[in-house]
View (cartoon, rainbow, N blue to C red):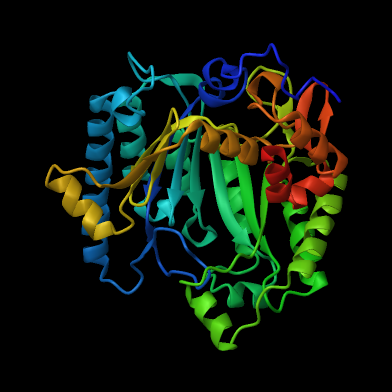
Length: 424
């Protein structure tokens, strides 16, 4: 048995929590800012969103201003409360907030707010917290909201990265997904972001949509590769029972996604993106090598998402936002109106929280850390029973490489099973 990642009798069983090398507090500190607004809520969407497409323009502008003010006020109050307010009662967290290594503005469609409002939110974040000199600042964007002027405003506000929802380059697949943009629009938007000075651009894709053909997925991947984007996220279409898609599948008016077909789509993505020079660094994410500043070339990985996968800490602000600090998770209300009412009345918009015990944190560390291709540093691996470790190795789901515990390619597809075996 390899002891590089397996537990040793003389090893500190708490080191993975109190003195990690890459995970937990060593992963950095992030800020997540949620903007819930969308022109239309797509039938598959289960995120905390609010559709505004049928509202009068003046009403929408007032709502955007109101939300921008509330989000900024919520941020200031959370920061003023201090980091101990967001941690478990017995956590040894004192002093000031850590330096922020990444900011992610997600949604919804944050770019519906426009450049000026987004700039004011980011300015408030800079005023309240210390940002790392190389802080990654990502804003999610839908292609139909993009323009050179918008991207120029974002670049001026310090945005370094745009994550754009393309989903597919097949018109009939876009129609099924209820996406408003044309198949060509994401490619135009990528070029506009480049022209405006956005350093990195990512495209999000969905595969396995009912009605999607093999050639549709291949055409989509070819278009992404030709676009010269730095990063690709590709997710199998997942159906939630509470969504219109979930109800349509339940009544038989929409075909359920074929899991075997989605597995084939995933393999095609691995082959085509890999051949095009993308590093498959996480189950659903690929990155090209880019030049960042004056440093050496490196893959354009999402630093904010790596923070999640490495079990790091982050502040969450806005409707439906989640936060994590030292094993305590908290989340705000998913209702835009309740969020606004709470913040404007001086009340907390937090809807719930939980403190994870060591066993829960151990399972979460494995579930998250093994999503990344290189897996976990040996010092960051929680205690694992030797027999459970041997069982996982024998199953072909995990392996050790350079002392790191990581999933095999088979294990990536069966991550829950791999972690279940490791937990015994």
